[in-house]
Length: 497
Ligand SMILES: [Zn+2]
Image (cartoon, rainbow, N blue to C red; front, side, top):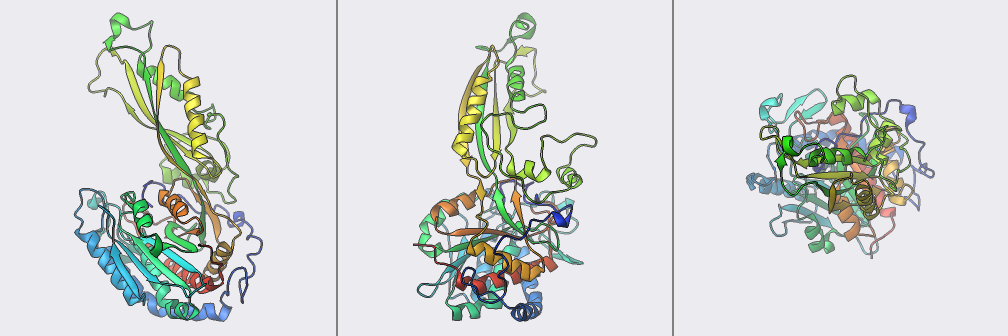
């Protein structure tokens, strides 16, 4: 994920493992064949796969290290050569893992993506495995303990830019295919691996890409391996994502700037009026005060307040805003921020009354909230709270839908079962305060597909940050879970056309 640099690691650890939700009803069918969830592995098969994984894991970690050495940053202004290089490297790994059709392709000005396919036998389902091979810029490389593009092993962790986000996602797919690829071709299950090359740059051509490659990418279940697990030892499925709407509000009070000594008093300047307007957006507790917005059901897991304070860098001794659990404030409540203001800078400030000011307001919306309705509610609030003496003008901006995974479907039950077999413990359902806009695109272009958001990160991975790293023990479990999920996919229903 890229769009919220600070948010990717948001799904922190549970304060109390007993706070984990009860396993979903029907999740208990783990072993033996099951018509609803597909043939799942026996304990013996799980252990067999685990032993084989032990053998092949060192090679996967080597291959991951080789990918980390390629500085595949797809941001504008960066050399595109490494992005092409990393696409080539990923394509080679997928060919080597036995995928018969591997292509590198792009649309328009987009970065190269890799599509690898093994079509399903007639009537059998196809699983699409998503990851991205581009990475975030490093920031100041001097701030890193070791060079960001020289993978470094320390204890259980592999450090380097992309070691977790999301080259580990790529290698989880490759490793799962190495483990069960042959078995899948015997079973006739279709597998498509789609490795995007511009996710961190905001996936500028994603929608055009998936529309142009609809036939190659169409699937019954989509595994997006680009999120985080709850804690080392506790897997998670990211089942809720907030959406976002934004707008720009302009406050006008004067035809032109005038001398504050000559005219100040009978009129309030535009910045003061903007401040008064913005102050109406939250109540005295710090909850969003815009009427008509939805708050979703509180998550079953809770994050210790101390963890949130540390991760967010809350100033010592300062109160938090809002009510309800930390996770509910992060994942299931609306959150509103002023993300920019056009105003004279302090350096250029003169003794004049500022005639107009403009602010950009961003509203995160939880699952269950229609973006259009949220936008309308915010506009209505701003218009009805226009301070006396000020003209308020609004320009509506972007809208992105929230996401809530269905909890009790065959693919979800299969994923829970695979996670439980790999970790020995049930996965928890977590949310992300941020959005993953490309998930909305996937759901719109492939309405029949079910999307499962899994991840390779843990709370210490520092995706997008300095000293990004992957926990190798967790990585092994991710690979095993994915192999189990693929193996069980033969029993999934065909959902697409
Ligand atoms: Zn990512």
